[in-house]
Amino acid sequence: MKNLPHKTIERLSQYRRALLICLESGKTHIYSHEIAKIQHITAVQVRRDLMLIGYTGTLRKGYNVKELIDLIGEIIDSDEGIHVAIIGMGNLGRALINYFSGKRTQLSIVAGFDINPDKIGNTMSGVPCFGLDDLDRLIQTLDIKIGIMTVPADFAVEVADRLVRAGVKGILNYTPKPVNVPKGVYLEEYDMITSLEKVAFYVKMHNDEE
Amino acid sequence: MKNLPHKTIERLSQYRRALLICLESGKTHIYSHEIAKIQHITAVQVRRDLMLIGYTGTLRKGYNVKELIDLIGEIIDSDEGIHVAIIGMGNLGRALINYFSGKRTQLSIVAGFDINPDKIGNTMSGVPCFGLDDLDRLIQTLDIKIGIMTVPADFAVEVADRLVRAGVKGILNYTPKPVNVPKGVYLEEYDMITSLEKVAFYVKMHNDEE
DNA sequence: CTAACAATGTTAACTTTTTAACAAAAAAAC
DNA sequence: GTTTTTTTGTTAAAAAGTTAACATTGTTAG
Ligand SMILES: NC(=O)c1ccc[n+]([C@@H]2O[C@H](COP(=O)([O-])OP(=O)(O)OC[C@H]3O[C@@H](n4cnc5c(N)ncnc54)[C@H](O)[C@@H]3O)[C@@H](O)[C@H]2O)c1
Ligand SMILES: NC(=O)c1ccc[n+]([C@@H]2O[C@H](COP(=O)([O-])OP(=O)(O)OC[C@H]3O[C@@H](n4cnc5c(N)ncnc54)[C@H](O)[C@@H]3O)[C@@H](O)[C@H]2O)c1
Image 1 (cartoon, helix red, strand yellow):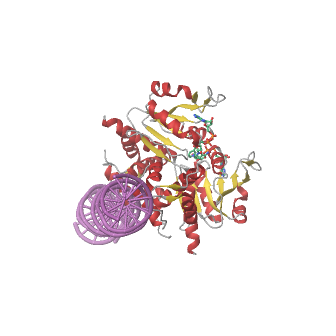
Image 2 (tube, rainbow over the protein chains, first blue to last red):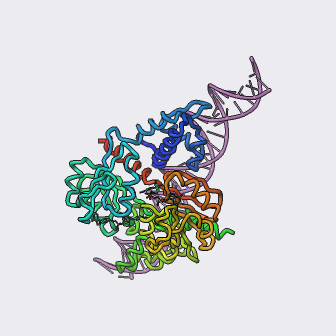
Image 3 (tube, helix red, strand yellow):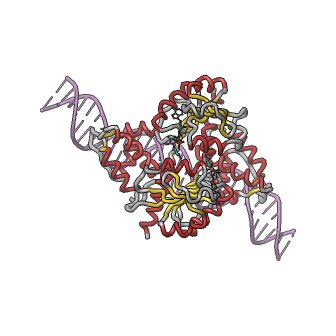
């Protein structure tokens, strides 16, 4: 299951999110076109993705929701859970902790870090906040593999470097400042302004057409 | 400038973000490979994108930072600013308002909406919070074109429908619940868990290789 | 003054991703 | 019991996106 396309990985995560909702509502089977509708893509694409992971549904009955959830889990989750840290317990950091907590058993946020003495020592939504000084030590002792960066942009580069040095293998950077990581560390960056500007661009385009 | 690739639009927004930082630091010119380094892409891609928007730099001097910022603005910004609303003034909504406010003159968040009576009537980072009842009316009177959804997932579909009915032309959905919009309304969805799971997947992959 | 260099701009090749086309087979309809 | 329908799984084609190759041309060095 090595060479799954990047886009397929993203979609598998999204399929699972949708399937979990279906499961809750008591649905046991689902058609490719139903998944497609939810995700705003085509049914062919869903079937192709499932083909790639080797899942085969039942003709005329669709896919078994429970089974598919489990299979997606086998592919994208790690066997032993992955520990995650959030660096920067400000507005966004707290919002994220709040959102993530309890969502995925395989991905647990085990520590937050900040430099504000008022925040250090507190617990937010079950996640303890430590000082930056403890970063290196705790990443090692808690076996933290992924760091989510929500510090002010000016500290982004410095924090990323420290995370890498401490041994983190993945970084999710929500700072608007791009950072560099060595080979072997996976980096994902997201800036909400880019998304908003993209929406604005297509809104404008559509407007101009009229 | 109609048929720019979607990916190019995203990158233009990112180039501008980087260029603005350069401008502040006093840099007047920049090479394609410098932009590329910042964005973790290749110099060829930068040049190709700039070719598509018809900007030509100076041989051996690179691109004029100021000029390029302005040109990107002409392409992705609207002539008259676009008004944006945030629906759901919770953790994430407030974080976004805080982050966006004052960042782009062409994109201004002019209203927030919530159902919590304690929040209605307040102002957060300069953005007034209104009740949901005023949504339709205010979207029209304030000429709001884009809605950012940060309500609890269970209300996502309902809120999206109302936004569409009220005349919004773009929706940025941060809820983990996919919503549907009619043709003519541009929809962008983002779920942080998908990003995190993607990072986790590649971290796992890399681990397994060893 | 000429050669080497360092940058851009563009065409062409390649890779990735999506979509279309269709065979196969279970279920439903008649 | 045969035909039609519906849905999957797969191969092939198309489209989108990226990278490579290279011509061009100021600039610097000798
Ligand atoms: N707020 C948003 O919606 C939003 C959206 C996208 C990106 N961002 C970016 O995310 C980052 C955080 O945004 P925010 O709204 O949470 O800001 P914030 O100011 O509320 O939070 C930043 C936190 O980081 C802490 N901090 C500062 N320096 C630190 C360091 N060196 N190490 C560890 N912690 C440190 C601060 O004490 C504070 O608690 C910013 O870079 C912002 O641009 C924010
Ligand atoms: N917190 C995060 O980091 C994060 C990340 C990604 C996505 N999300 C999603 O974003 C949404 C908001 O997250 P949050 O952490 O801000 O939650 P929150 O509970 O802090 O905020 C939700 C806000 O929406 C308001 N609200 C409830 N129903 C409403 C309605 N019908 N119309 C308008 N307002 C309404 C509530 O009063 C509250 O103020 C959730 O769907 C969450 O899953 C959150």
